Image (cartoon, rainbow, N blue to C red; front, side, top):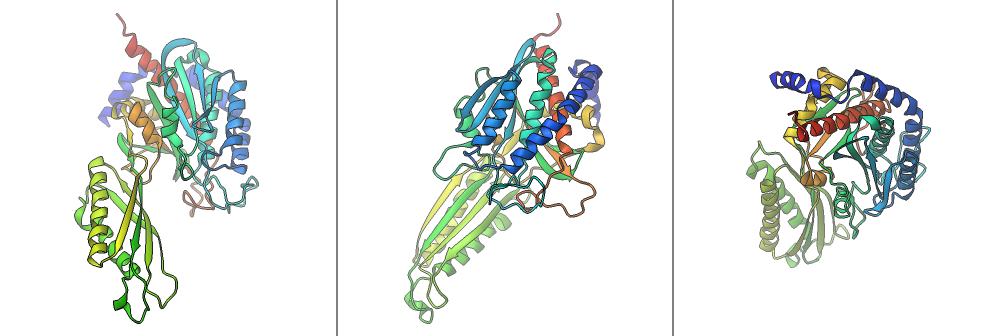
Length: 425
């Protein structure tokens, strides 16, 4: 609490968003509100999977072109990067939204329910896109207050590209989304199952890394009544599952979070035949890289030891996904006074690292990043659907607040950076 008070005192004089600017932000949000909501609903009705966000990208680009932004399209296949140059010189800050949907059949019953069978915005990326697009509209009205540039990054394939394709944040970075002009920091957000009006964040680790694996056991089929003549891949798989679960429960430090989940197992042809093959697929979530390396090796050791003891062959395909998401501590601390001013102390929650993953983490490996969770839960709803659920329905009242928070954060960041670059003599 003392640090928060110190920050408020220290940074209050340097806020770019004074009372007049705050009023302009509020008015601009009201002016653009219906367009933003309509755009969100259109995107929700027309969801597109990763690397296939063609119509979503066209809509976003057309909106930004009408605002006079400098636009790049086709970045990382369907991504859009737009630059807003402020009236004053300064650094460049970025804000990112993900655009892709999930392969889920929607069951919300909304009037703007998905028109694409089996595809749904079940992770709130339509809300993210609406907030970042809305922020672009508001800051376009406040160019005179921008001390530098704001780069708007609309990213495809956050949920992962199709098999065999590149995509997501890594490809955005590879194709120069953080360059020309070079970005000094990046901001992002995610809808979260807490009450609307509240936000959550942490200084340091926010989310886990995400790895996947596929284990194939090759045994020998035989009659189920004569198991001694075969090598039962299913029995071996069961032993491996037990061994893998023991990695977390018995060899991992309980104070260092880790999760191993095997979500899919297939094998066998009928009840009275020993399975010749069994395949297991799973995910690993960790916070630090040391633990990440150790668990990967432990899984391979368990599979090798178990399979060979039964005389079976095996393969382990282990794929590293997004690294853990890390909020730059100094950036998070410097932005805390802005968050306090916008939403108030009772509405800010400090959270422990979550074991879900986000490829925004790749951006945070390149430049200082700040990522927070935005509450989208109606307090009157006692049984809200979770993320990645067919009935997931975030409250649209979160959108104006998200825009307001982002507008304040970006303006204050650029103002603070200009003061750091040009200290008084």
